[in-house]
Length: 215
Length: 82
Image (tube, rainbow over all chains, first blue to last red; front, top):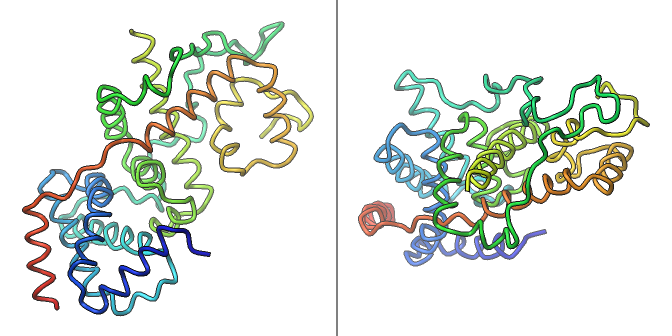
């Protein structure tokens, strides 16, 4: 079943196949921001990211005739970008955030919250319960978080994530993909997707906590 | 997990399971342990709130609009392609 976005995309793609310029402009307007974010995960500079995005749209034009809508348009689009970014990195002899190959930063036993925040296993009453519990972020946290300052902080926190985590959280939480779409774009398993997403979200929460606690 | 299935979930375990919980990936038994812990632990409730707020805010990060230069280049590609 198609959601509204997919239905709307399908109309634009049908028009694009008819060489309708305004459909192309709509699609660019809708996805440019998401593509740029994703490209920035792979690119060393902003200029390179912009080139990758341009290259992705070229790929769309080259491939649109054969796009049959078996995956959502954005899955197809993001996959083009990721593939082109990887090819480019290989050509340049760099390694890239191949989520499929795992991520050096994920030690399976590395906790997402520092162990010191919890009581020890031998605590007579509350083993492994909070020793330093999180404190609420204020009376109206939703509003407190939607400020330019927190947006900038979050962007910085995301940019500092290990690339494979950054790739997943960008697709999922920033670009609004479903877990299935993320797996299809990156060629990773549901489990791997969840692990990367969990570590990424937990780190961003930790960064926000440090910011609010310091206030 | 190593813990027996009927053992009470600890806070330290809960923070590792938040995404599995939100993604609906926990077994029925573990989901129940998670819910039971959450009901009785205000600290973990705060933690869950913060994770949810984090996710919501990530979804609100402003997107960059297409620059006029980028659009010009793309339209050039489009017209050659057409």
